[in-house]
Image (tube, rainbow, N blue to C red):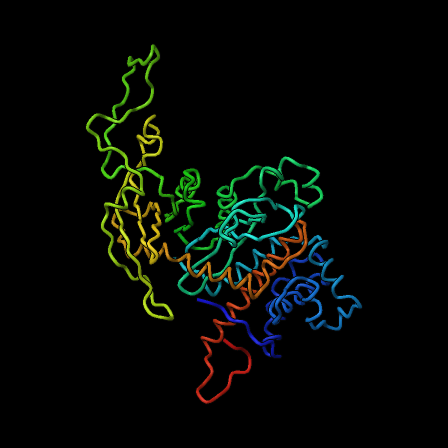
Length: 424
């Protein structure tokens, strides 16, 4: 489901001002709260670039903010003003949850990448850039998104800091990275921290979905399960599994190998051997499954859904106590094969698993809109504070659009009357 960009008619501007007022109490002073409303207006106005300089030329300033240099004022508001985006995002999440939260909610994790030139933008380095589909100089942020039957929206986002940054305190100082963020965290660890933050607000949902960038981490999968969540997460074709329950020989206390007692289980003779997912996919029959209606017809693909036992570390008995998981195999239209592990209950059907797995699609569409229409990747500053201020305001703008779409669906324009507040 895609949001839309409204024409900023007096009616829409009035609702935008009311929406912005929900967050005013979280700013340290009234003036930054007023600039937040101006910035939201600028993000929603038509324009190819939503960086501060062109945005400042398009906005209409209220009388209380009638300054000679809106560009400088907005630069100061985004990059230097010490307001904390975290309580503002908490209020935003609570506001949207009133309309869109559901017990069927899904927490979805994804990377958001921003190609960059130079080496001064916080977190930038040569690394895999999803926006370009290859390694490139870029920033990467970890994001958590919420998908429910009523709508989808971003919950939170945080920049990933590569080791090259963490090893350079002066560089961190120049970018204004807070002391509590100067920790060596994997993307999966950042994702779990973000998840803990939003779940502490009692946002309902019991399933997590992520691509292979997160799913390949056993610690990440274990972290989701420890939090009581079911998951459907991507893995890569080189993962190995058992297709039947393996048999293990447990070492007796007196068993010795090369003079040392054997302490680890080993695969019993006659037990089924492990197999790589890529090889397994060649032998498994897949059947066509439709997961939803699209604008051009039914969306479908070919899938297999089978029980497997993880075999990572089988030679040294590391997986001897691993419980069975579901394996989802997807054959895409171009022949590409994708794989996902899931700890969904044993009685779960393939249709449910496929629909959960495909819940990633609207999120990809949502981030595309945030980048192309709302300027998520137009920020030209270099600091940690500026980046996260800008990203938070883009999320607020997206939330406003989502509420506007919901309002329009609840109050459709009557036949024969022309809508004046929006355009699809």
